[in-house]
Amino acid sequence: VTLEIVLTHEDGCWRARAPGVDLAHAELNVLDALIEARLAEGGAPSASVRFDFAALPEWLRQYQTHYFNYALRPAPPGAPGPASEPEPPAGGPPQPAPSRDGTPPRSEA
Amino acid sequence: MSTSRRWSSGMFSTEDWWSVWVGLALYVAGLAALLGVDLVGWMPRTRPWEWTDTVGAFAWSKWLAPAGATYAGWHPVVSWLTAYVIFIGLFTLGARFQGLNLRRFVLGFTVLFALTWLAWIGGNELHLTMVDAAVDGRNRYADAGLTWGLQLGEGAPYLLALGVGLAIGNFARGFAARLAEAAKPEWFIKTAIVFLGVNLGSQTIQASGFAIDLIITGAAATFVAYMFFWPIVYTLARRVFKLKRDAAAVLASGISICGVSAAIATAGAIRARPVIPVTVSMLVVIFAMLEVLVLPGAYTALFPDQPIVNGAALGMTVKTDGADAAAGALLDDLMRARHLASSGESWAAGWILTASLLTKIWIDVFIGVWAFVLALIWVYRVEKRAGAVSISPAEIWFRFPKFVIGYFVAWLSYLAIAAAWPDLKAALASATSVVSGPMRTMLFMLTFVAMGTVTDFAKLKGMGRLAVLYAIALVVVIAPIAYSVAYLFHRGLLPPPAQ
Image (cartoon, rainbow over all chains, first blue to last red; front, side, top):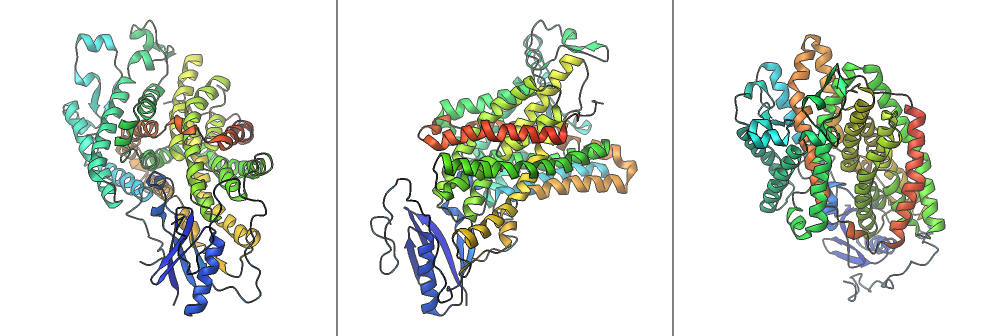
């Protein structure tokens, strides 16, 4: 059974919610890895992730009504991890690390 | 809640789809005239007036008149109130399905509707519009006894509407905030673009070769331009302004492709943090307004003999559908007035606007494909996540601008009716004249007012290097390349003479 996940971006963190799942991280690739780990634990073969467009400002919705959807599968063993931007972020607060259970860090949530 | 979007998702909950429903509903109502039933002739149209004459002997009929002969006996105010009731009814129905605050929407729409008509009536005063030129041996400027005039042609009401909107958006921000629920320039202009499908149908019948040429060269010009725009702006953003990859990609799409919708589509494709497209979108909206204010007048003054080139260049340069259509309409009217004044000849209305709009529509159509390709590149080449993340081609459909469907349905159905019943061509033109005439113009006017109220130039403060990059890219990259490509494909094309 595909795990159906709704994604939002709140207080500097990506947040993935589904029944029994509430994961957050500042980096989407890391959040994907957390979801993949949850998939491996739960036995679901894949996750369908949909960004909740209602999370964007209301005035933007007249221009576009869709942000992104994607499907996630547990990466095959030995597959390379996500590539990251080689340069440091141009300013802004330091990115929070994920908490152990995947819930948002207190300072950010 | 299921995360699997159906292909029909949003059909009754997005402004994009509601522009199709409202536009086609009124178009079909117009077609009822072919069966002998006039369902849209109550729509008022404005009339040219001169202020000393009106002050001397006021009558509503000097400002307004019902557009349809069936309703000629109606008092102009009754005609106007009917239009108000029907348009607020249709748009409020859409607002209800979209989950908007109905009380705020109705109040806001009422104010915008009233301002629109005030600007439209005011902008039809002869000292603003009338061009001093003899047409067919008759000079209406002299006939009206005018001693001075701005000679702006039919562009005068648009400029007035824009001025009213901008005054509210920049000097009465509290008032603008109260109108925000109903100030939906994209919804209004997309509905008007559905009506423009009727104009394209009529133009295709009048001059099929020219119309088809515009459609094909518009697509080709758009394709060629974007081969240059995106890579140059992206490189500029990365190498000179040192933006991160995601910000550079979103900004490049916003400036190069179709503004806000491209910024959001690209940001979605590369899974950027939402703050990036939101920031870029604010820039796009403000710069689009500057383009509307500057480019139509500049092209008219600098290139008065290249109307179709100017229109196509505008379509590739001005971002957001509302701003492009608004700028195209303004350019159409200003250039025709200028040509009339300089040569005494009239170009048919609407062709310059069509040139502007067609290039924009091609851009809009391809945004879904571009975003899909970019998403694949990002996942497989940039993030190297091929094993875990997959993107469905359905994303192309979700990002496809649905109002384009309404535009093509109106265009093709118009052609199909004319082809199936050639004897009905004149009746068809007459039946749809209210929809493609005063209704379409009113929605353009409403767009001008709404666009002005949502534009606050003060938001440019604090945008820093993003605003500088946007300005440089627009002036140094986009505008010159767009004009060169438009010149390459459209040079020498002129609208047919007015009949």
